[in-house]
Amino acid sequence: MSTNISRRKVVAGAAWAAPVVAASAAVPAFASSTECEWESTAAYTAEGNASGAKGTQSFVVPPLVDKIKFEVVGGAGGTNYDDIAAGSGAKITGIIEVKPGQTVQLIGAAGGIGKGPLSPAEGGEGYGNGGSSNLPTPIPASVMQRVNAIWPKDSSLKRIIYSASGGGSSALVINGTPVAVAGGGGGAGFVNSGGANNNEQYAAAGAVDAGRLWPSGAKRNVYPVIGSTGGSADGAEGSAGKQGALTYAADTSVTTTVNAGEGGSAGIGGNGGSKTDLPSGKSPNGVLGYSSANNQEIYASSKSGNQGGDGFKGNGGDGVGSYSYLIDNNDRTKKEEGTKNGKGYALEYESIGFNFNGYESVISAGGGAGYGGGGS
Image (cartoon, rainbow, N blue to C red):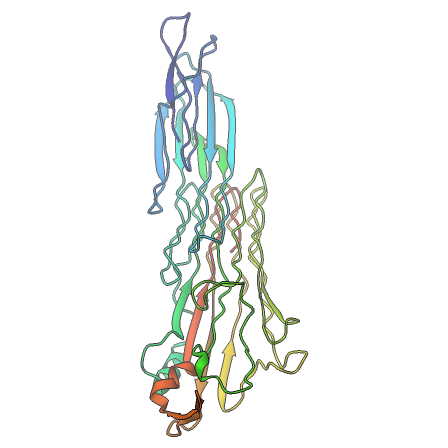
């Protein structure tokens, strides 16, 4: 957010003109009651930075100034993937009357942050702060102990996956009263799609691919199949984020849908995304099962998102965590036997156990801040 000085052509003295908004700030401009020209550059600017900190700037309205021209832009949501969009911040512009001696404060928000799926992120700071994905793992210690007792080594099935954080809100405040609040965008989440046996050369003859459908050319375990996008702030009411969904390759009638958080409206925080209905029992064609079988214990959880905060300084809802785990209770002294390229093989449990023992949690994305923050 920024402001600059404009000079009157006729009357002696200086009239100030517009604070300008950069990436995530508001911009007032000043003019006196006498006709004057607005300057093209701003005398005051406040904007957040890439590390997530907000920017602030204050000034006192000078003599002979009775109007401020402003532009306020909220911080965009963060994302961890180039092809999964986060929500955009709102943009508000206008002209408002002021009196000499009033104190004007500009709060330029920072956008949400995406540090990659293995790193948590705090929400962008602002007048209200964006929702965070920096949460502790929801996996119970007892579950980790049981898994580690069988497979103490690290593996790709032992991990915490983080979504990105929400953007902060930017504001123009006069004598302590908010005049304009531009909401921030929601962070982008994702629905991951992994698989236990990722080494297809050891798949048994006739084995069914129990994994998810992947877009053409997508790399397994590198990108999510479909990411849920963050909602955008727009006017007095923010939009909801976009759903994410996954479909199983072996039965396309089974789809898991992840609902995004809702936008805030009129000072009331938006609701968090509704709890995901996880499949259970067997798929309609009988091919897939979603419960413990073959002496292996399988568990998966889901959770509703958090509501955004209320009021002018409404924070975005923080993300929430869900978890799953797999424990193999079969005889680990037996070798895994099969045929590869016409030759028999016998694999020790030491070389395959990571496929059948693990725990994983996913932390959802944070909502954007605003006059009523967005839900996660």
